[in-house]
Image 1 (cartoon, rainbow, N blue to C red):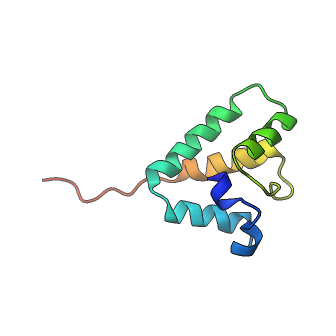
Image 2 (cartoon, rainbow, N blue to C red):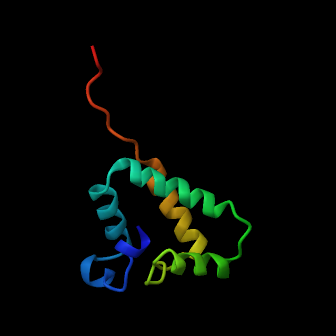
Length: 95
């Protein structure tokens, strides 16, 4: 997700980081969005400092800075929270 939506082309493709997150959430299978939320939660559970989180963002493909005023861990927490709130819509109940 980070390398695809937050590459150096992101400012040309989206108005801001929120627009990129919204596009990812709307255009990606809900199970993958949920997986990102889980992986972000696991990453934040590691005993890392901000420098390590910044390096993790780069290693995961993010080529732009997190939006102000977020630190790398704050940005990850925002992503995890936003994607963790999404609930898949299920079809009609089986009869």
